[in-house]
Amino acid sequence: MGKNILSFSIIFILLMAVTIGCTRSASTPTPTSSRENNIDGTIAVLGDVNGDGSVNMGDVVKLERIIRGLDQRTAGADVNNDGQINQEDAIKVEEIIQALK
Image (tube, rainbow, N blue to C red; front, side, top):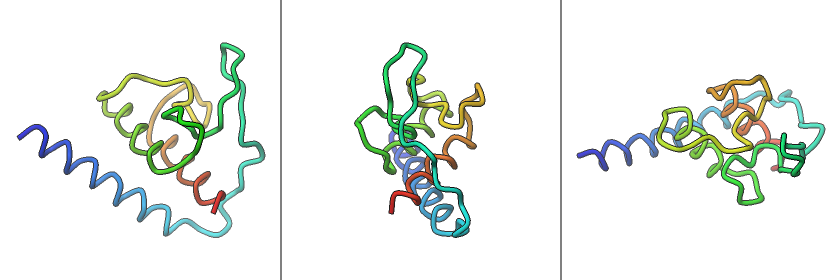
């Protein structure tokens, strides 16, 4: 039963992310830089929460799992750099994805 709930949650998150991304205004700001410096001096792609080198819906899913306590925090999880990992970071990743299209 736990796997079914987790699968449903992931599908729901993906559907919500796509819906939110599709309804965003054309005036959503384009990111000024696709890279940022991490605290440890390494360079990460802004929005690459799962660390695979690209920004896509996999990063939104990873971020949602971090927010819900299912995965450990990653170096790129605080996308908007406000010191918190929350839904605002997921929205920022979706904006980055839209800007890349």
